[in-house]
Image 1 (tube, rainbow, N blue to C red):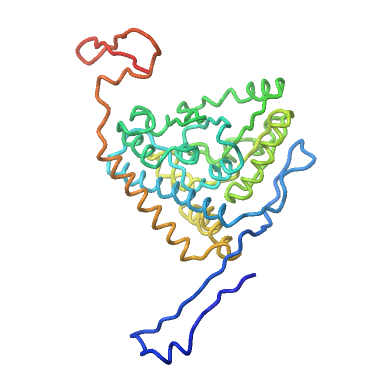
Image 2 (tube, rainbow, N blue to C red):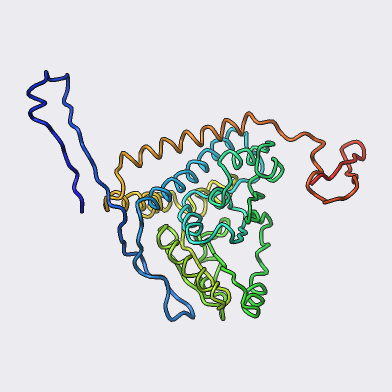
Length: 359
């Protein structure tokens, strides 16, 4: 492994007057890539699964770190704006689960299609939306990705079909499994198992918590969802499996959310603060990735700190934009509902109001 080189010129030091304080010049050489042992996946109806080793390049590592930091900072800023009553309505935060969206996006193609449930801010960002577009959508402004009319649960990007905001709307999952298997559709079903369904632990809600086996006749994998490399390698495997014509596959990502179900849920009535803190201290996805990068000489602590500073500035800029941008005018309320349809009437507070649907 390349070592840190400390360069001190004694000749120069002796020839020149000493400056106040001690000055040393350090040159650091990083490795371009490193291999890591990763946790093996539990398998269902599969003879072999993803590899138990993953190669991470320096460029990939820095990219994943910045993405996860951005999602984390974006969610913490959303928490702050919600408590200031700048963000209103439902808001479901993703902090703690960053390795899931970043790992999956690293394994698929931009042309692949994705739809999620309503905890969708992280996926919205990695699918290509800017922090400004996401934050402005949360505050209901015109610069939002859905023009300020979707909010937390309805964000859209190219090949990303938004968060499904209806609780239980994923209840048709077994019929979907059946059709996907019958038609051998190239589909990856992902369960982000963050241990709780709203305020109910999985142990209280399910007789079997082996969600990766729920497809029965569909192969499945249970993956460490707190490790971005585990998620990436599993998603690569799943994508290759489905693209080869073998049909659908299930990924259960074991992860954890730090916030409650939504901003109206303090998240400590059904779990202890100690539980949350233990996950933060032992399994945090950003911390794990940071330690891996530093200990393998892929990056330095100082370099990663610079990324954190850059991310904070980006999120602060997005928040300022999201509070200064104007709200959509009332006449745009009916826009993007129908395509090529004549004006329609909506009952207002005092009278019927006629709106135009412009697409």
